[in-house]
Image 1 (tube, rainbow, N blue to C red):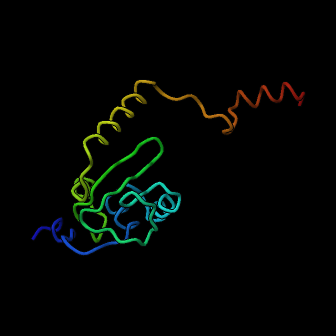
Image 2: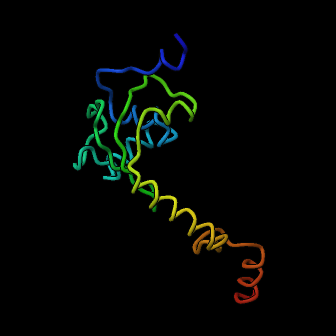
Image 3: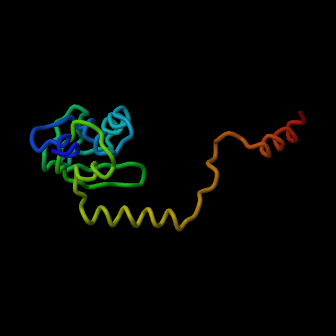
Length: 135
């Protein structure tokens, strides 16, 4: 039996935060817990807690920034595996995938974003401030 099949379970249940981490939606489990507690993840149309059980066929709605996934759980995994194997854990709705791809293409077409206000001042900004204050 290959290692990919050995790490993927076909039955049972798993914690929601652990599944989201194993499916590579979040880089760490604490980030997954934060998103779940923040209402960014819905399980079968309702808000859930991180310890809620995920089973095969469960429908999830995941929001990250402007992106949204509508997925169905197809398998469970005991550990985090490569992205190619993690993609086998779920199936995304076609409409959700198309909408997300359109958003990504729009963002790419818009070009690089400008500097975010309120960030650390550049050297030029500091020079202008010192000219205004006379220091």
